[in-house]
Amino acid sequence: MVKILFKLRDGVDHSVEIEAGYSVMEAAYNNMLPGIEAECGGGAACATCHVYIAPEWEAKLPPIADIEDAMLLSANDRRSNSRLSCQIHVTEDMDGLSVEVADNDI
Image (cartoon, rainbow, N blue to C red; front, side):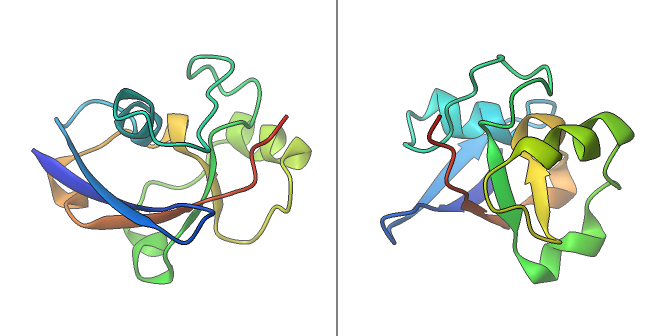
């Protein structure tokens, strides 16, 4: 199991575990964490699973794909470390990944 730390908008941190192969979005959604709306179910079509990647993890993740980059244009408060959590597929070497949940209210 891979542990992922979610920093929620209310300032509370939640550590969840998920099996490799699932997405970061699924880790949040399956654990009912607030702020990850996942309106499109993981199809990179809504930006309601927007997160900010902790600086120490940015270079360790696969690069952003064109479709993800385009969808993030519609996200609230896009930053240089913005990603769609549905597009980050968990691998064993992501144990300890830390993300901050963006303002995904629609």
